[in-house]
Image (cartoon, rainbow, N blue to C red):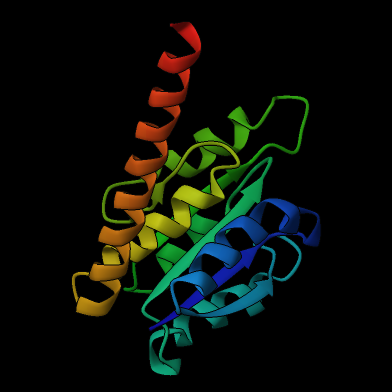
Length: 162
């Protein structure tokens, strides 16, 4: 299992790091790169073109403002691409969100919420779990632990209200 985690700027890393940590916790090999659709377009295209041959199974791409990176990568690979719109401008990330979700037919990019790197990682885990049973089991455990935390919070709240 190998995922490319690409961001348009190193200033995106505080958000992207959340995805990185989740992927590592699940035992997924992750390669992190800074590649820009605008400032290093040839390198970004080469990464996307060669990703499958290098063993990548999925790409997560984070970008702010014009946010072309996820779409450019998706246009150059057959691998699934998940886009993370980054809140990095006076438009509160809506510009990035619209740039990523408005892909033309035939070039899909799965898109999570603004700054929602955790969900990008978890969606990647779910996609890969179709192929890897062990990952599917870890994801089931993760969801069970989430539910147990909610039940515990519910119990504490109701005890406090009595």
